[in-house]
Image (cartoon, rainbow, N blue to C red; front, side, top):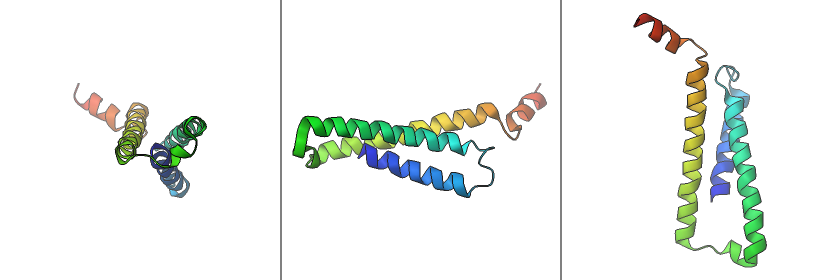
Length: 104
């Protein structure tokens, strides 16, 4: 489930990156690469788990699937937080700089 959730996040962020004209300003490539990297990490994890469990890998318990789903959602949320912090630090429109200078 973690692999599935991260792959969906990677695909959606890549589509948004491709279609958006302000991709550089919004750092959408950074977000897409983060999710593709997470997908690659979960894929390698799945391969090693399959090597350990064999065919039992394809019959997980419902509780394990739910836990994996929540882990996948947590990874996507953390990725979005990291992307948001990067956006705020780079401040492409200068909004934060203007707020700081107007209050001093």
